[in-house]
Image (tube, rainbow, N blue to C red):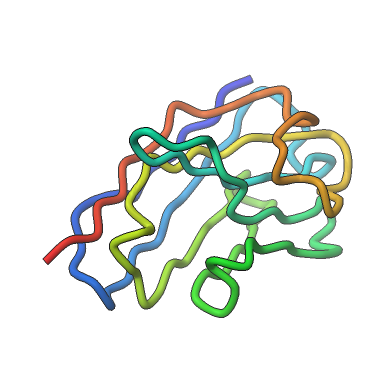
Length: 125
């Protein structure tokens, strides 16, 4: 199983970025995908999660209303549209996959067996 996160970069506060996560090696339709981030010196944080079948989406309070998660099962891909970015969004962003539904405790990351390598997002003027 491989997950490839991409789309990170340097953006000014208030700007936007769209992250992509492509997955191979499993039946994508049956897996939920989570986005996590880790800033320097901080613990990993659950950012968002989307269930298989597009049943439900979850967001951290810190990104609610600014980030949007979506998936395209035909392309084995999940996207994270990030708008109105803030300096505190600076982190390495990871995608991960689980065969279970996200659940309200997805942010722990405990149910996610496979992880991508991460993509760096830097929000700075």
